[in-house]
Length: 475
Image 1 (cartoon, rainbow, N blue to C red):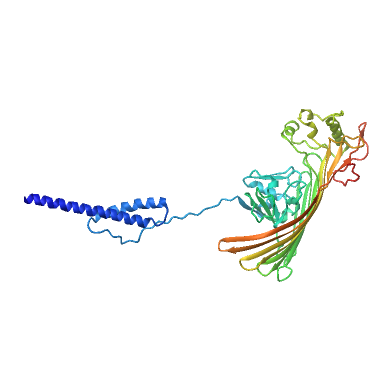
Image 2 (cartoon, rainbow, N blue to C red; image 1 turned 90 degrees about the vertical axis):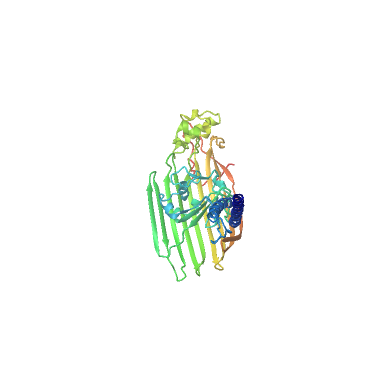
């Protein structure tokens, strides 16, 4: 009897202790789960709950009697993440631009960037007919371009709303290029920045009086000269200016002809207070170039890389083009050796193609800090351009019987505009708004001029100078 009572007492005590232990573990687990659910992230809660249960069970086993109390600070888990945007945006600085040979188009430096491809038929990249740039599959017509904020329009040959950047500023006066390889920002003054933008920045005048002279020489009679004078600070306010002259001259590396252009730049900066300024910029460029023949895989495979227009400055070149034009029109004549293997021999070479172009562009800018957080920038600009682009066609003859005639396009641009923008910086936000107005008068007439006839292998009259001025068109 006594043994039975003792056994019953021990069984009752074991049951009570087991219930207390089970209750303690459940309570500790519930408390830890509530505390660790504070961060609000499901993944974090799951991880923390498992750790809390393990720790509580260890505590319950070590202290089987009495309520479980936490004397330590509540455990908490904080999860944070920093998002990094890998945008295709880069500023090409002056140091990289200066590493190229004198007179090189600044766009050539962009070839070091992934996804950017700049091409040109000449080594310096200044042939406006052949230069082209691609950015992640977008063509140059889809890339917006500006100079100190003013629009340069499409970088196309005979464009209708701007100019090639190489004619807007001498390469030595480019301080940098802000390259955006995604869709251009809304504050870029361009209507064609779907594929990105190139924002050129001109260098400011130096605070010290001085001058710079660069001279470059190269093969094919390449001759590049650049001279610049900086006034230094003219008064206590820091007013200063510079003026520069550039001349670039080279012969074509294949075929015959000269590629020449000259340029004048000037810039004035008048500081106002500590963070404001008024600046003015002027550019004049004068270009005269014999252009290269367009190439195709068919021409490269059958004629090689040295194929070019027939023009050689002599009667022999004109007579070859004359005979090829007769063959193209089914009037006899013939093509030079190798041309018969081409799919279109008449389009493989022309007699000549040339470009004459004059540009004047300038702006007046007020960059004013209204407060330490509000800035107002207004720019008034103007641009005038006249072109004479020529090529001799073998498909349409002259009234004198020659199968050749000279086609001359004479585009002109007269545009002016105003840009005004207000920016407000507060906390981590940059707020801006502005307007852009431009008036553009574009004309592009085309005329047809006679080429001399050939009788018994002799050119009748003088050869036409493709870079000269034409008069008396017949069409």
